Image (cartoon, rainbow, N blue to C red; front, side, top):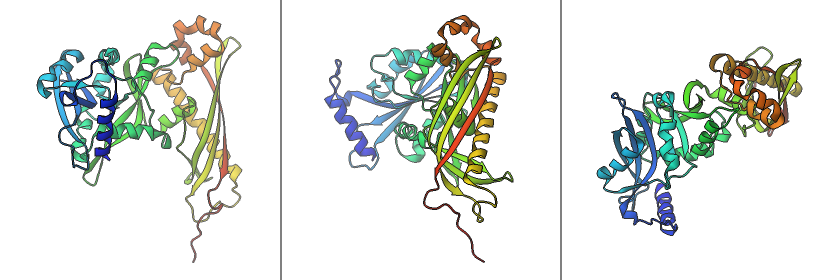
Length: 378
């Protein structure tokens, strides 16, 4: 797989009509980067570079890791030429991982160069490290023996099936920074450790006030955020039985969320309506549906659980962070532009005092192959 990917990459380079065409042998193809801060306050950039010289005959494309510190991104990137002997080629970069320290200090100074350079692409995925540094996450390629940045790009394309992390490309992050009425987010990447082995896992959300990270959401809260933003494309809803014990798993087939801002008695209020279509994919009890329990019962409890999760997350954002990651302000601008013009300069205060109501409906469209659980005999 890795060798095929590398071959396609090299072919694409040879076919592209770049105005500053450079021989492949003279380029260091960057797959992804990690950005940290040194103890002395300098930037530390670690680049994962595709090894175009040693992949022939290998089952995996090769890679090299190069780290260098400096005062600015541009300085580091230029000075890396002395380490690689080649000019860095950025058009195929797939991932940028920031340390939490860098994210909390503000990301504009790190991404400004990247967004300006004529050779970089705006569809690179961004992440915030859940570990102490971003470099240790990127260094997982030494364990997996594959190009980690390419793996991360594929993981984010498939993330809709889990919906426990947002999918954020750098153009989208910058767009949120420059917009009014919504704040930026980024997925959190961790090192998953099990049985002595390490692997990457993307779960959770880093929350930003302007360009500075102010907090995190876990995977469950992230799924709720995606519900509110009408960005949920899949995933699982866990539903308890009447006794409060985990009993059912509903696979999300589709979801539609509507946000309706309105003024009521001089106070701004927003209504959140969700309509979620699901399939019953798991019944975790040998008794099947408990006595007196029906499909509508499960639908109702799923809807009530989702409503509670949505209200809890909105209140957390209002009271703990004061950050509108849902785009309530954007929706107000779309529906009531004159009202938005009056309140946009004090939106943080308005958001914190916003009255929110939630109405959720969950529909179970199918019960897969059977409508009953497996029954264990005597």
